[in-house]
Amino acid sequence: MAMGQSKLNRTNPDDAQYFIKGNLSIEKGANGQAVYKLSDIDNQGIYFDDPDVTRSGEPTLLEDVLFQFSRASTDYPGGIETPLDFWRYDNTINEWQPDVETRQGTAGVEEKKSMVGMLVIDCSSSIGGDFGKVKNAAKDFVKFLYEASKGIGNIKLGIVCFSKINETKVFDIRPLTYNSYMQMDTFINNREPENGTALYYAVDKVVELMNAYCEKSISPKEPLSAAFMVTFTDGLDQTSRNPDKDILTADNYYDELLSKYGTKMQNVRFNDIPLQHEIRGVKGDDIISEGQLAKFQRIGESLGNFKLLNNYSELGGEFAAIAQNLINQWRILNLYVPNSFSGRVAWTYPGQKKKEKPKPDFLRLPLFGLNVGGGGGYSKPTQFLEFSVGLDFAIACGPKFAMGLYGSYKTSFISFHQGNVGLDFMIGPQQKAFLLGLGCNLHDRYDISFHDSGYSVHRDVYFDAGIDMRLGGVFKGFYFFFDFSVSEYSGRDYVGEYMVSVDDWYLVLPQATFNIGINFAQLGKKNKNNQKKQQ
Image (cartoon, rainbow, N blue to C red; front, side, top):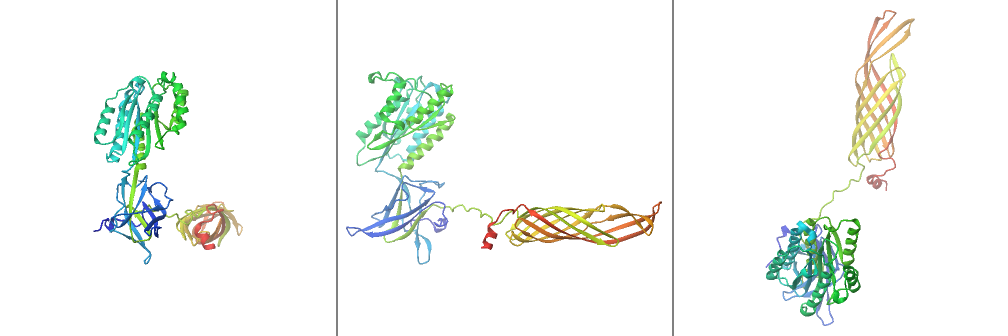
């Protein structure tokens, strides 16, 4: 019977955002039995220990082969509990094929291994009104471990709530099942803040309790996979002492801890498993100076992996993250393959990889320039020289086309002024493109006086808008163009002292200038599109 998901719900390994891939090989062992190896392992969004290690598979009674991945976790929104789809690569058609007959990949816990830990909670009165947040964070931590481990009892957990030494309360280490989980919840609920902060005493006590438990209760049939201590405190220890061991002050006790266990508790091991000590601290009411705060942080860092939180509200999230990391160390992925197949294999969660928007292989602003030019206009009875200055810019619509605006100002020696505005077009590869333009010119009115056949003549000239056209090219960091325009203008001539009107006339005036400019947008730049064309 098919055990996989519908093909429609599967994501091809080449498109998957979450996957494990590898190369499956079958070799003949010394005893003549088949030996299954998974090598060249690649993973994305799914994590486990030693991804570069070649793994050996274990044949099962269901005639498939099991590969296990320890300390498994994933970024997949559905979580590690979601079954993984199995794929194998068909070399005859060069495609990944879904295999719905093979068992799906599943997550579980290492039921033959144990994890032993202690939750160590500061119950000092300096916490004040935030003590409820501390208790809630502690209860959620226990609940998370219970639910994630499915309550099968492989996690062995105890709790120490400390203030002054004679008020330190201990919930002995026991398997985390439903009954013990409810008892721990009640134990935490019943705690109330007391004076004192016997942190060093509590840490020392926890190591002794864990060592005694591991020696008595951890057997080779259920080996220890991890040992942890998770501690919260809000202030400096002023309470710890042990006269029986000649430890008379808290500072003496701190020195004793470092001497016995080393910094970050690196010398503490249970059944040859190192202790993981996570410490979270909040600045309590009894820390009032920067020097005390610095000492608080220094002590925390010397005892374990310390993180100073901004407030008590952050403790719940920190405890949840620590619990998740602990469970991840204990998680395994069970991945199955057919016992008669060799080649490329893959397991995926649904969800395609995020496709990045392709970066354009051209400049978004291929033209931004300043130009100057000169030319003139001619039509009887008017002719003149003119000079121009202008600005251009164009925005790319693709690798071979861009459009924008231009504007220029022109002036002449006869007080003649005009402005040109229009649209710029770049056509072709950006660094060697044609430049075209289409627009209009606008003129102002001007007056001139001159002598004609012995008479003094005064002329009023009136201009209208005309058509403006451009033709040129862009070449890397500069550009050039010819500017052609045609304008119409009318006028009236007056003669004599009394300005007698003698003539009304109408003319068409063609003009032309040659302009050259600097293209700041491409000055010193090469875009990918033109690089390819030049190769």
